[in-house]
Amino acid sequence: MGKIIIQKQDSVKLYKIRKTLEELTQKSGRGTELVSLYIPRGKQLHEVINNLREEQGTADNIKSDLTRTHVVDSLSRVIQRLKLYKDTPERGLVIFCGALPPEGGGPIGSEIIKLYEIDPPKELTTFLYRCDDHFHVDILKDMLKDDNLIGFLAIDTKDTGWGLLHGDKIEVLGETGSGVAGKHRQGGQSAKRFQKLREMELTYYFNRVAATTKEYFIDIYPVKGLIISGPGPTKEDFINNNYLDYRLQDMVIATIDSSYSGSEGIREAFAKAGEILSDFRMVEEKKLVDDLFRHINSRIGLGTYGLKEVTKLLKNNVVQTLIITDDTNLYRLEIKCKRCQNIQEIIIERPQLISKKSELLNSPCPNCKSMDSESTEQDIVDYLELIAAKTGAKIEVISGKAEHGAMVSSLGKVAAILRYNPNQ
Ligand SMILES: [Zn+2]
Image 1 (cartoon, protein in one colour):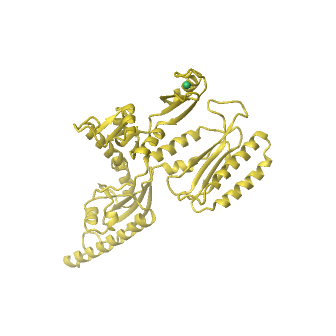
Image 2 (cartoon, protein in one colour):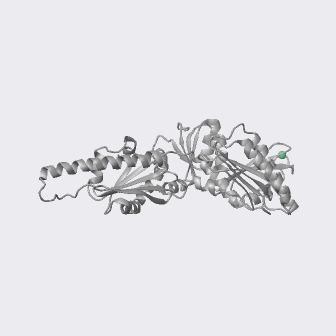
Image 3 (cartoon, protein in one colour):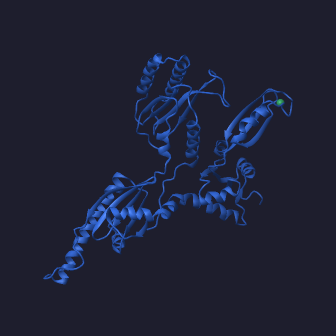
């Protein structure tokens, strides 16, 4: 009991999808011209391409010349992109494409077709094609929600209820009566015989509950954890006598003493489970941060922090795990002189990015005084990930809002656990 199993998602991947969706949410089209395309696993790409060609055909009806051109061009870009795939990817594929104003804005007609391609975090089951004045990002946003299903079981000798927690919502799945006689026998029955009968009934009831629990929480809604509640010691009897499927037995996160069983008991247990659940979700991140602080406070010197220091060590292949919060809002801006190839690198927050970029592009190269330079910018996590990929370091993006995330924020939002102490 008390064992916690969480399916861990790739935190860098989720971070990037979140960032892209944030960006896409802010975009709007001049007309009804932004394409959103969700292709579920198993859907034939040539079918999708045919659909898109038909859509291109109907675009002739669009009155505005500019909108029509944008739609036709966007669809061509998507079709080109799909042709690069031999098969639909394992989890499906999401593409957003549309004519967007250049960064910093621009006059009508200055839009450029941009395409965003997203490998969904889990298997996509719906097909969706939309051409609208905004991108349809809700399906992906829903996928990013915490999808650790948690099962609830509220049991006593009278009845049992089952509930399912999905995201923040609890749903009562079902309820059953026990059929077990009350504790007090009727007149005329021998105490011994009554007791024996009652135990048989209870065993039968517990087995029945266990079978339904397995059906719900293994077969239909595979849960990551189970919370068992109820008044009195019945829940402990049920757990300790191993009625549950062994897999569920290992998933019991907690037992909660409550006043009710059945469906009322589910709602009560959910109301009482807040702390347990938030611990459950945060436990992986917390482990990581605890580990980091243990290293920072140890004399062996395997814990370090600060973006500059960590980046340097990452490049030198000393970093084992890099930890960064999801709220740094930092970008790496690179200005490269086209004549002498001199590179200026600046780490800067998003709000200052555009003005700094134009300032540097309009300044002479510090090396050769040429005015001809080009710029690239990257989210800091993308940049760190590129370096990490070369060295085999692991990157973990953690929530900056949570308590342990705040501890990392206090260290400058970036920290690392090292392979060895570079100063020894
Ligand atoms: Zn130069």
